[in-house]
Length: 369
Image (cartoon, rainbow, N blue to C red; front, top):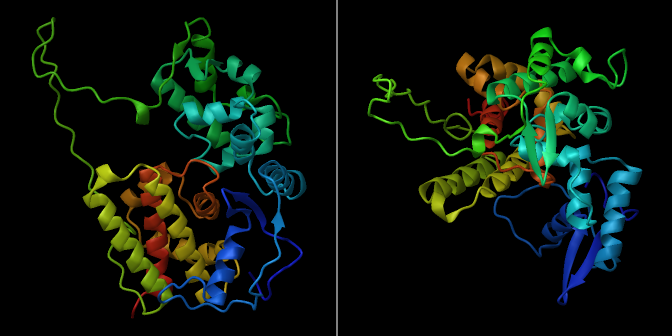
C-alpha cells in the first residue's frame, strides 16, 4: 500500500448473486480488511496505512468491469505481458485464441516458462502464422503441427530463446522481423532439410504418456530392455530445511511447508492448480522478507541476495534451476506471474525451482546465526 491508502484508484467491484466480488484491487481490499480487523492472520505484523471502515469502490456491471480492467492494465499502463493480454482477451472478451497463446499452450508453456519470450514485439513480429510456417509450424483446429522431430523442435526453440536473450533478435538491428536469419547455421539447416516433410501433430514431452518398457526381444532378436534409468534425487521444498530467525518470515515459511506436506501426502485430492497457490505464497514470502530488510521491491532483494545464494548451490542444482529458467534476472517476473495467476503457474517443477532459489536467499537474509 505504501505510506497511505490511495483513493485515486478505486477497487472495481461487481455484485454477483448479491455478493460483491473485487475484479481489480484485491490486495488493497485484503490489506484494508486486515488493518480494520475484519481478517485476522496469526503472526502478521506489518505497518499499514489508516483506511476508513467503508471503502469507496467503482461498483459496476461485469461488462464495464472487464473493460475497465483491460483499459487500465493494457491500454494505459501496459502492465501485462503480451500473453496475459491474450489470455484475458480470449477468456473475458470472447476473442479467439491468438497464435501467440496457442503456441504457448501447444509447447507446454514455452512462453510461460521463459519470460523473455513474453514480449509484444515477439508476438507481433516473431511468433506469427507466416514466420512460424517458415520455421516449419502451423496451427489447425487448436493443434500445432510441425515438420520436425521432437528433438529438432527442442533444438530450434532453445536456439530461438537464446537469440532473444542475447538480443540477436530484438526490435533493433538487421534481424528485426527476420528471426530465421538470426538462428545458428545448424538450426537453419534443420529447417531447410525438413521443408518438404509432412506436417504432424506436435505434443510436448510433458503431455505424453510414458511407454512401458518391453522386456521381451523384438522381431530382430535384439533385447529391447534397456538399462534402468537412475532416478533423479527428489528435491525438498526450498531446497533444504531452513532454520530462520523468529518472526513473520519464519512463520509464513513454516505454514507453507506444512501445507506442502499435506499436499504431497495426498496428491490425488489436489489438482495441478495447487502449484499456482504455492507460487502465490512464494511471492508473499519474498515480499515479506524484502520488506523486513527495508526493500520496497522484491527485485532489489533478489538482486542483492541471489548472487551470493547462487554460490552456495551445487552445479546440479544450478543446472536444474536453469532448465526451468529460474535465474536472477527472471525470478522477479516468475514470482510476479505466479502471484497474479495471469498465466499458467501450475508447473510443479518450476514451482520447486523457485522455492529452492528463494530458500537459498532466505538462508542468508534471515537464517538464524
